[in-house]
Length: 440
Image (cartoon, rainbow, N blue to C red; front, side, top):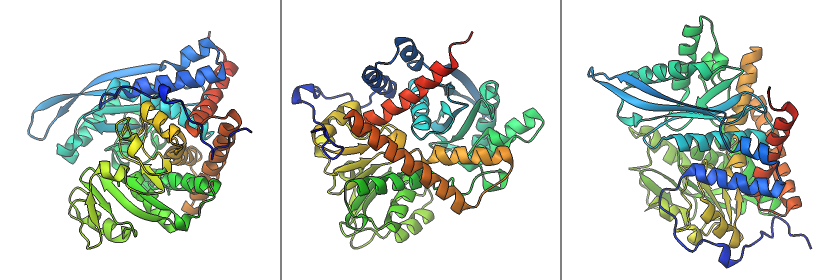
């Protein structure tokens, strides 16, 4: 009998890693490895496979910034466009000390697959600056943003490459980018970025979109598995924009949120956390962290303990490679919904698969943000804006349709959801490459 998604295939023990991975793996190697596996399964044309293994463009810039004390420092910046086969490139810009070319390449490729798997007409891009913005003033961040924008502007454009917020960037940063492009272009060009403030052409519902999309696919997964939401416990690693909204929306759907965490540590209550009280404490914290929140029925835990706590659903919504070969065998959740990009290493994936853990991959689970970015771009281009209810309904329609498509495809191919989603996405991009041909 053909196995179903509830009968997750296992691998022989010999196929699992015999050596522990390095603590910090290269995300680009992970992305290329999974692409190669999907290409082999699809019997992909070697020429198209070679095209998809390399980004179309990699731009590295040196960004000088005059700091408030008058000193000048130079930061390394990146913008990578992985594929424009299915439409303009799309992807966020992050400010983080760990940003490097391989990370940006990997995230750009993941954006290509993400856009394809949810069926929106974009290719993938990503950008960032290797910097710790937490020690910078707003004026310093603004000057850095505007200079970086000017330096990558030759490859940007509303029909070419449209940035969006990512780690340590927000609607204000997008506003500075849009204003810089508009000033240099001599015309208002709000469609150059998404994730903008609403008063500059941003979309209602965009801020919550990634977390909402993750909550929607979690609900669809539980429905497929025959579980009631009201009987489901959830842990969320990363109580930032994505994780906090996913937690709140899942609670409104009936789930019990028993653990949350951020860089300052975590909170755990097996009977359910008071998210309203936690949100008030986070809002009052100078760095908007969970640190300092106390309640008589809440235990303090660290991020590693959150990953391995006894829950039904685990949502890793922090940074990449949090679930690794050294902790995957201790994860007790039966379902993982990846709110972050690349939170699971390939070695950990094999261990989870052998244990029957169902993983909804990042390219599907956290695609809600790019879906509403697409809806924002459409609204900007037509200069006609929708109410939040319509945005949320469009998001729900796309996420539900995409989950069911991936689920059905994975069952038909008799593969786990991650490989099924990637195979489906790669096949869509490959078909676009075939249809367009190779110019000239």
